Structures are given as C-alpha cells and as structure tokens.
Length: 331
Image (cartoon, rainbow, N blue to C red):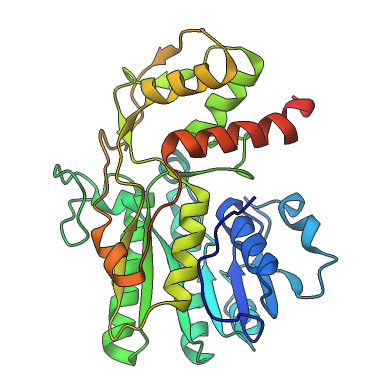
C-alpha cells in the first residue's frame, strides 16, 4: 500500500515495539516497518479493540513477534520493552462516547496503562518513545487553526486522559531526563479501521453506508468539520519522530493535513466515489464533540520534517477501494 519511504537510515539493526499493534494505526505502522526491513517488530496488544486479523498476515515474517498482554499490567510492559530500541505507544481506548459511558476503564487504560509504558520505556533505556496524543486535548479552545501551546478545557473523559498523558510525559522529561514526543492525531482514517461495533468512527460508517447504498446517520447539521488525516500520514509521523529527530525536552506536535472538511462534504466525496445520491439522516449532536477542528502542522514540519503525502480526497479514494475489496464481500 505504501508508495513512500519516510526514513533514510538502514533500520535492519533496530527493534521496534508497537503497543496496540493489532489496532488500526498500529497495524499500519507494523506493515511499514516490516516492509522496510526492521530487524524486529514486536506487538503488544490485549485484543480488546485491536484484532488478530489485522496482524495475522505478519505471523510468518521472521522479524515479527506478537505478545498478547495488557498495558495495565506493569510486568507485561517491562517484558515487552526488553530488547527494544524504539517504542511507538498506540495502545489506548479511543472514542469520546465510550469514555462518557465508561470513564473508569478509559482512565485505567489511557492513564495507568500509559504511565506503565512510560516507566517501562524509561527503565529499558529505549532510544525514543513516541506516543499517540489527541486533538481532543484542544477541548473548548475556539481558535483555528489549532496550535500546540494553546489548549482549552477538555470536553470528555477521553480528552482528560490524553491531556494527562502529555502532563506525565512532560514531567518525565523534567524529572528523569527521559524525553518523548506526543503526536496529536487529528481524525485518522484508512485501511484496517474497524467498520463495526458501537464506537466505529465516522468514515468507516460512511463507507459502509456508501457500499450498501444506504443513508448514513450524521450527528448534528453536518457542518461539523474535522482535519481528516489518512493513516499513512500518521505512519510517516511515527517513523520520522522515532528516527529523524533529536530533542532535549518533551515535545508535542499536531499530525494532520491542515485542511478542514465538514461531514456533509465528506459524504459528498463518498457519493462521488460510490455513485450514490442518497441523502443522509440527521441526528442530534453528540455530547462531548468539538464543533470544528483544524491543525497548524508547522511545528511538526520543522521538528520531525513531517510532510503529509495524502489529501482527504486521495486518502478517501484509497480507503474506499480497500473496504470495497476487503470488506464489501462480507457485508
């Protein structure tokens, strides 16, 4: 799938741990690393929201290792880090609605689990620890585009947990001289994203509706906008943050495209791809949702040489084609 290479040095001397590697972003990252010759790629995942099917294709690869384990278990984290050069921490319980329905479990995984991984990586002397931060951290701050040092109040338990991750990472930098990079993802989408389940993201749900020629549900009036980011852009950010960057303090960068798309525009693009002309069904607004989101990506460009390769339309085209090939036959 990947046409681009995001690193210059030979990675066959390095070992990588991807937590949540059976999930959506994690499995795409595993695919990139194995394709480009990483010496070892170890996945730590408890398969609660990730799927073994996402990584099954790697099991015959000599450089791949799957460890079923939970980041809420400190021993599992220390064992997973052992012998690793780089850690990309993608494991988390995503979804604002899930966090509203079950804030305790979201807190246990996203805060306690994150802290366990941070301690394990510090103790393991890894070269770099990269973690999945979130645009939800901007909360109710009205400014657009979103700039890393200007945030508001969190609007959901999920947003609280992702902000606490950043606070812990900053404290570890100051207290232990252990410097990390947080990638504030903006609505990442692409192949291997879950199309089913109560907390499926909007793009897989829209694609499923387009493939079935059914009307999608839209929360609100459809003018809510997001900086939708194709998953290969997130993979690029992880690779460059691990390999292309020297830092002397904790850093957080926006990972997005720098373009704003409304839900109505999103559905229109998918109608063009699928040949559908069905009108969406409008539902009430969701609690905890931010109205508009748009990233300033200049810091990521400067710090890790991030340069998104896929626009929303290009990414949707690739994603639609993937679901058409991989999923439609099962619908």
